[in-house]
Length: 246
Length: 261
Image (cartoon, rainbow over the protein chains, first blue to last red):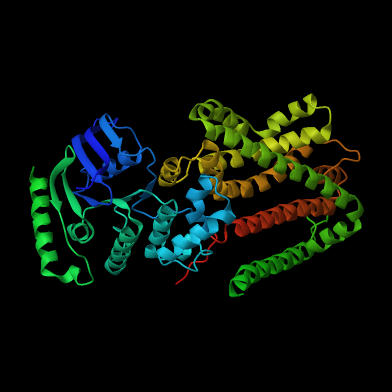
């Protein structure tokens, strides 16, 4: 694993209603990795992501960053766009918060739109777009802030398979070109194997990392149908099954 | 175009048929004009007494518009105050409710005694009737911001002020406009009720006073004419506010966007 960008040690998270979401969770995310948290619903994978983002308080444990400056991008399960704002203004939001003037931000917003295949859609409103396009806006918004780490909480779960596959490919291309670190949450074995350099399989009640699978694969268009992909999916499925029996 | 025809033609047809039936009934039964005047007599009265009715309409309109403006400004201000903290909202909201549920006819005489200037007293009455829908709707709207968007802004390190201007205010807009449409009608009702209670004549007499006056003089057609002017004003306010709502929301809100197949 490359030098860790963020390290979580002994994280406990107990919600006010007494539910123990996480117990003694340790994990480290290396710089430039594409790490997937894979697990059944309710295993606390979204909670991990939110804690890394600094949303919500941990009950105990520590989170350490290797650098002081760590811009975070977050993509939620639904696109979470402002319905009253155009695509351009939605993507402009993070820069607007930072006080970047609209004119100065315009080239960066345009560039982000280009990168996710939204060129020419700046004036459209979210409701005029398909689900896949809305998710692209959400990704562009994360992109425009030039994050060091991108946290994605089941971003493609609500999309159809064709759209999901295409967005998977686009995400991998962006990851390679932008030198991001990505932490991706999913409950799909196939998606996790397709995208990740490392998979952390989580078990629930209380949530913790039960096993880890490192994947070193050259990904190209044939990977999804290759025997190696099927093998790895089988391995990861077996680990997930173990995690769910614990 | 087709939508417009459906919206306009049937109600207009009902109106024409209704008026014709009314006129026929009044004539055939020979009902005296001081009991129930027909539409023709009312129109005659409207034209004949236009010189007194029209200035009264302006008076009522001025009170209504003033009250609605005050309700909008103060209503939004109060809602923003409520949205700042749950404590403020919980402490003050009951009093807004009390003001809303107390019948205006019961408190209007007090206000008219306390406030020397009649126009100001009428304005206060109309404001009390009309401000609540704006307060309650806007408060609800300000508290209905998408939680994930709030999280996102927190992540980007947005200030309270930025969260308010970029997120909370725009997401409250449809709620506010819904409240405004109700308040528009209520402001007119409040103005008319207050005028009835005040019952004072003089130069500053609104339409309600004209109705009272016509009643005393048994000028029933003029009474109806004034009544129709009030109703017409109410309809006009509703149409204008509906148009404003549509223009503000047409690009993004489900209520204003046409559904497709």
